[in-house]
Length: 248
Ligand SMILES: Nc1ncnc2c1ncn2[C@@H]1O[C@H](C[S@+](CC[C@H]([NH3+])C(=O)[O-])CC(=O)[O-])[C@@H](O)[C@H]1O
Ligand SMILES: O=C(O)C(=O)Cc1ccccc1
Image (cartoon, rainbow, N blue to C red; front, side, top):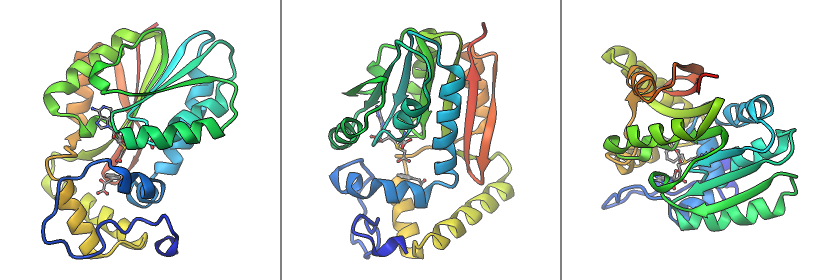
């Protein structure tokens, strides 16, 4: 059982008098691989598929961006599968604790493609000559008023034929469907060893920090930013991933 492993996520397992807002600090970094696998249905599949997509879409002498890279899982998946020369992966996160650990993990990996790891806000990243931009569960943590600016910036920096892969926790317009998805999600967490207390305390910590939007909101914003076709390629309950291509 993952609960007994040294780097198991037990951050919300004891009753808390006061629940602080969730941040990506050192305690989160230490348990992050366990936390994300047990908390995001389809995470491992999505990471694997990002590798497949990197093999297909990466053009020679271009960049691949991993924005909100955490420990670099998507970066490493892309690095393993990029089959063309002259490419660089740019991995960005604004948590110094994440970036410190990410840099160590990237250094231990010996892939051929150069990786540039930076502690930076996604809002400040200059994107150019991009074949692929990955936002794997990152936009959900960014204030809604900034989301359009970020996606517009990504659209501008992508080469024609380049793709954005954007995964998000989503909400649903229909209230009863929304409730069913949340209920199924909580069952998934319980099956993965989280207690009701852990689920509810983490839910409170994520309030006003992780802000899900509906797939309609995402599609509309992506269209408004120039992406002609943007739609879901993966979904499990209230977790979905969208692929959007810049026209050739
Ligand atoms: N404004 C910001 N600028 C830069 N980074 C940010 C910002 N806001 C949040 N982050 C970073 O976005 C990441 C979100 S986790 C991504 C998983 C990863 N993509 C993965 O494929 O394993 C998803 C999750 O934990 O649910 C964290 O590392 C934050 O520090
Ligand atoms: O655990 C949750 O409720 C989530 O929505 C997923 C998640 C995973 C890792 C950090 C923050 C949120």
